[in-house]
Length: 144
Image (cartoon, rainbow, N blue to C red; front, top):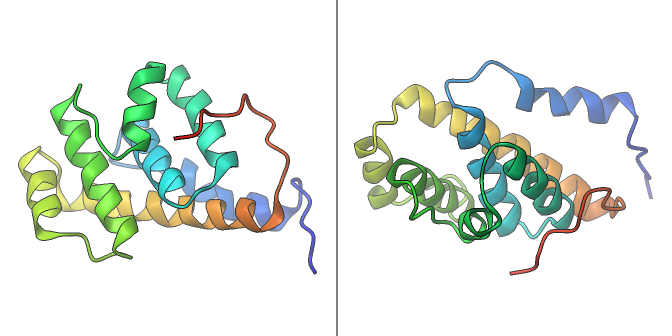
């Protein structure tokens, strides 16, 4: 079995997708990260993005709601959370309703492409952490 160390260059190379130029704001990327990590059951990423989400201005209650796939406190982020959940749950075949709501909320095709890039990147991270069982070095996120 291959055991990866956190500082290996291969891991660092793939993580660069999250830092690329994007049409999405940091808060929007955190919504995608939180929803995707919840659906994929990645405790490491749930914990990391709960901490980052708080630094981005989300409350604990908002983060828990986002992880469940909604954001009733902000209609645009709600459309994003629901679209992201539909993309992840349906392996890229988001429901027409979620796509229509996403675009009706003001998102563009460029935004949709950036959502897919963030989702893909987060899925790789989720799988990596789920397979390797890296120790969680953030405050552990509440289970839901």
